[in-house]
Amino acid sequence: MQRKEEKKKLRSKITTRTLLITLSLFVMLIMLACILLYGSYHMNVLSRQILDSAKTSLSVAQNMLDISLEKNAQMINILLSDNGYIYYPEEIKKEKEIVYKYTQLYNHCAKYTAQLELCDGVFVYDSYFDRWAVSGSSDSIFLQNGIRELVNAYKDKLDAPWIMAEVEKKECLIHIQKNSDIIIGFWVSTDSLKKITDMELTAYGENAHLLVESYKKTDEENKDFSDKEYLEVFAVSRLHAFQLHALIPKDDIYKNVSVLKWMLVLISFIFLLLIAAQYVTTNHYVLKPLQLLKEAMIRIKNGDLSSRLNPSSVNPDFGEVYEALNNMSDELTKLKIDVYEERIKKQKFELEFLRMQIKPHFFLNCLNIIYSLVNAGRYSLIQTMVVRLSDYFRYIFRTTDSFVNVEKELEHVENYLQIQAVRYPNRFTYKIRRDTDTKNIIIPPMMIQTFVENSIKYGFSNPIRDQLKIGIRVLEEEEIYSITIRDNGKGFPPEVLKKLQEKSSLEDENGNHIGIQNTLKRLELLYQNRAIVEFENEEGAQVHIYLPKHQVEKLL
Image 1 (tube, rainbow, N blue to C red):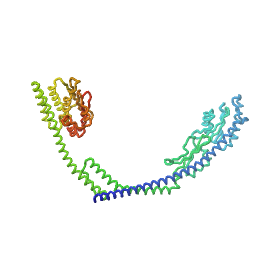
Image 2 (tube, rainbow, N blue to C red):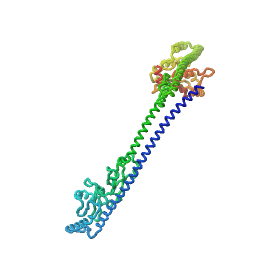
Image 3 (cartoon, rainbow, N blue to C red):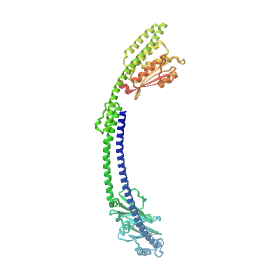
Image 4 (cartoon, rainbow, N blue to C red):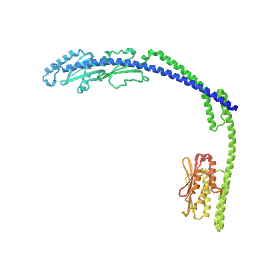
């Protein structure tokens, strides 16, 4: 009673300490997770606010650009609708008149396009007579060849009045309108678009910058900030030719909240130190003692009863558990030795009993055969029988070991069959097939002979067949040795076959089937349940014996 109380108290102490350590570690992890989530939430909110503010500013700037560009496009449309200056080149025949009309149109366009608010250059192109003229900034002459090639490429595409393209390594937005063979348009570089943009990116840091690029589908929601160096803001033009793209560095945004950031880092570092200290404590007082206890129990489970633990190496609670485990190992060692000695005695006694039991059984059968021959007066066969019986009993009396090789057993079986041939002349035939080296396989003596004897004993009870056929085959497979004994007799009686397949006892009060029962028992003892024997009826009785190779090699 006192011992039970002590165990209960010890278990309570270990459980309480383990719960306290685990609970404190769990609480610290929750607090650290809450702090990190709180900081991450506020950073994300700040990013979203800045993103919304920048998006609003960028949308206003984009709208102003669209208004200016649409005004320019309307003025180009007015010029193309002025019948006082627009002409149709295919109707003019004289060269002088063509030059006059084109010059008059160009001067008129230059006069009005000087009023355009957002324009780097204007061009007038007579595609019929291939006349080209430009006006505008100093870059106009430098860019006019590239712009002329683009206009030629798009002059027949009425659905593309706005073109965003690179001209002489300079990104430009080009607008074209056409009336018959007369094409008028203007262009503006992306640098000019950026200059007149009212958006003040400096409010978001000195490293923030604006890009004017071709229109492409973008993720305007931009919900994920974690893996990006910049906050990106897009504003798409109504003209569907370009878009504004602002890049705002996250470092510039967060520099105003650096105090909060460093506080989060410091708190996280402190909590990590606390968690590390807690882990060291848990490892010393709980995890390491449990690991040592587990390893010792695994060694004991695998049969190593010499495993011992030092009770003074851990805290007193586990020390008592270690001491109890050491005492248990001592008791198990003593018990195992006692059981092992008793088992050896029992096994030796049972093997001797089984071997002595099978020899008288066959000896009585042989006497019955000789007695029958004497009654029949067949003295020459008696002489043959005596010679073979002498060989047979020489094998019996010389075989005192638990195992013999299969080759000797087969020679003995063949001698036995010759003895039976004396008793039953011309009543049966046999065939022994060796498909492997039978000298390297060992089996209990009299094993094959027992099943062959069963075929002789019950094979002649089949009235349908005139001659009994017995076959023996030894085969080597990948992991096993296979021995098959078959006959073409009547087979096992159903009730006997059922007991054999269910591994039930066969021996009855009259001692029938004692040979098979003893053979199965010897296989079970000698091969430690690793040998398999299968019985079936297929055109007679069939017995399949499977011996594990590694077990045979070990016994050799």
